[in-house]
Amino acid sequence: MPEQQQRDHRRATAERNVEGILDAAERLLRRRDAASISAVAAEAGLSRVTVYGHFDDRAGLLEAVVERAVRRTMTAIETAEPDRGPAAAALARVLAASWEELGRNSEIAAAAAAELSAEAMRRSHERGRDRIRRLTERGRREGAFRTDVTTEWLVSAFFALVHAARDEVGAGGLDPPAALEALSATIPDLFGERGAPARRRRADRS
Image (cartoon, rainbow, N blue to C red):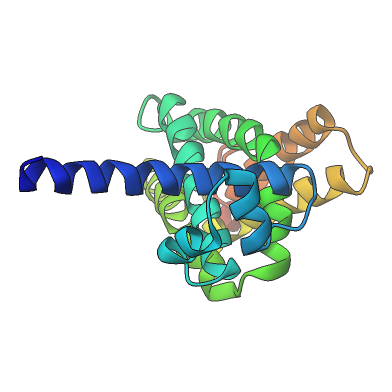
């Protein structure tokens, strides 16, 4: 086999192994089984040496699982067309798409929240944060979103509320449709998309 073909074959094998490892870790997490390196290797039908060849430890593997889940969420968000129409309407579509995808990844999210550092969580979610950040800045330029707090605060609050809703569903306090309804009622007020920025609403009440 020519050298280039050998390299291509090794690359394809490595990529296939990585996807198999991540798939195996996801299956274990969804079953709420321990996703140790040994368990993942067995689930994937690979050796521990192969898994360690791609991931140094369980934390690195879990972060990669989260990053792939975030990529899927990003695909769902883009399907919701966040750049189309008024920012307030786009935010509602993005929220619905994000919530649906998060529901598919609830066990992954719970494991990540319990085991990954705050830095790793922020790093793995940065693409999602950036997309909401850009939508928020567009809404502020349009005058639809509040400007009395920073964009970063709104972005952080958006994700905090979504994760709080996920936790409430996990605890049995709400079912998924009710949680989305609660989010759809809360986040518009948080962003101040009901017409006027929060500062003006406070002035109107005084």
